[in-house]
Amino acid sequence: MKKLLILLVSVCLFTACSDDDDSGAVEGNIVGTWLLVEANNVPGFEVDDCTGQSTLTFNADNSASSTFFSESDGICSSATENGVWTSSENSKYTLLVPGFDDPVTGTVTFSSNNRFTFVPDVFTASNFVFQRN
Image 1 (spheres, one colour):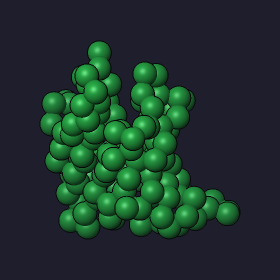
Image 2 (image 1 turned 135 degrees about the horizontal axis):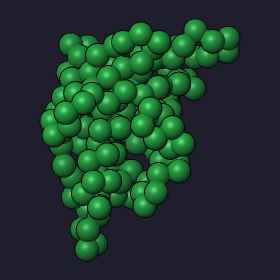
Image 3 (image 1 turned 90 degrees about the vertical axis):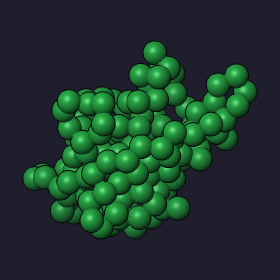
Image 4 (image 1 turned 135 degrees about the vertical axis):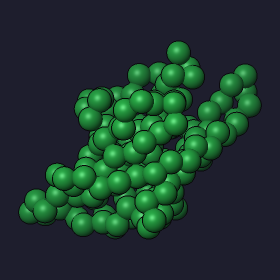
């Protein structure tokens, strides 16, 4: 179960999209390295000193990588995944991740140029907040 949660979080971390043109929305650029600062309503997962080191990197060539930290038996360790991200309609981005047959899609809302919230389409009650590293 823990490995499934880690895999899910990694998938969610890889997926991002830009904001809509809603009034009051902040337009941001997803390209760069982002630090996980919050995980809200994600059963069995919280951001702490270990998991709070997790990062996502989105490159301009549509390649991406994530380094996800987790703690087991008091030892904080990391796992790195590589993939690609693509833009699709409705300001959504999709990522193909090794080990998954289907792409993962989600919505990103920028609260500033240096902070965004990601809501995965498959778990709309959960969200992850990232800050530019």
